[in-house]
Image (cartoon, rainbow, N blue to C red; front, top):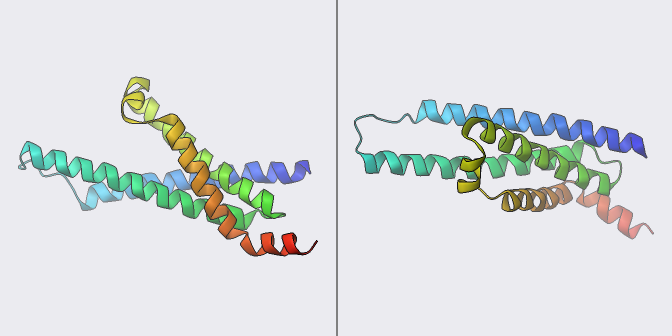
Length: 146
């Protein structure tokens, strides 16, 4: 049984870190494709910043959901292990994101603009949902096989 958990942790770390790297790459590319114009007034610059932050949040949630789905598909010895892998991969992604944010901007800034409990609970719920989608056939087969 411990063999399943070591594979779960390995897959979660790989998928979570890869998801973060893709997220950062997409964030940098969005900054290149939609640059800030210095000639814009303050209100327009503020509006562009708000749109970019909201778009990054939405893209991060979508990317995390897809990562949870594929992590569950890659490690599904049982449907429970698949869902646990999905949740672990999503948590790795969110924890790496939080750690990098705190290193860049500080704990005070994180507490001002983010909520740790909300972030982690959202990650767990979305990962559970998409992880269950990934192993749905296996779940139904094991449930009705008894």
